Length: 279
Length: 180
Image (cartoon, rainbow over all chains, first blue to last red; front, side, top):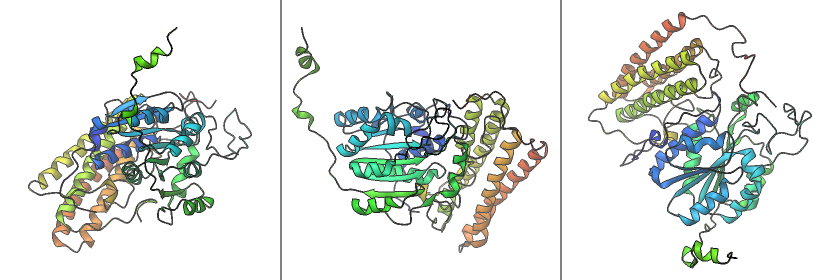
């Protein structure tokens, strides 16, 4: 522990709204909400300087439960909205969030290009390996032999999407994994991700207790990654070759310069642009 | 190691650090019980919601006690992940993902959950009271432990009023969410 001269100006409570979450009792997303608010308090970012953008799904309800600017957007489109916001308002701390279906299937292409573009923002994915809001279908991260959905009674038979591999290959500048059952670890990962320049990606394993009750047992398999974070993408890639999805911690810290185009070059107003479309 | 992702917390070496831990522990417990009460209200379980609200009120009294003890003391700032807990969160805060937390949970489960975490609070202070190198830390930890022991005793009495629910208490013949 470290004593500092000044305490943070905000408490985690300052980042929570009065809206009561409607998640199922026992859902891991409650802890992720707690982790986000703890991280923000620790960073002492005024709530009015933070924007939380989400897509669609259980976890994408999260902006309503916070006291920062929120945008509950379109399915899979949290990242383009967050990108536009950060580019036009670079002084804001921009966080995008959502679930595995929203982020890796409907928004999968945006995920790759957001990693590649490297705008200075943080993307938190609450991964429960299932579409919960639509009542339990296989998502991109579902194991191929999961047979509980009537849509895939024999399993999907498809290798699951590997978010950290894709993030690394696509150029994300910070990559970490955490577990909702360890909220203070998640808070630390989120705080580090926000501090790190460029596009930061944090996968948080967050059990769905309704459609994937067996995920309550994840707790037993979660472990701190045996090695520290690396700044070498090739080394990070080699580590992922043997990763079983349960190592938590920071995998990669890159040093790419964040993408932030100059807004001065934009001379046209919306009205000017509309002229081109006049009949 | 306290939890899978948590590094070993550094030992508490001063009364100021101990008070900062005590204040965080009680404050987080108040917030957590209120969050659990909110969950139960949303899911139409008013009896358990009321019970969690009561538990939050009791913890709030502990916040007042620790605040009084801290008067005139400059408490150090400790990041959430740097506390010396041996649990993933502060010992008195039940996880919102605990197995007992269910929309059909009964007062028995809520009290049992609270009791489990109060006992963890007692253990936390007990360890400090017996193992700290500093006498002032041992003395204060011992005092704080006594308060928690009283709370444990109260919860034990409450729990004795209820029978353990039969197996299958969480089975809902008409669940709000069905696999499709």
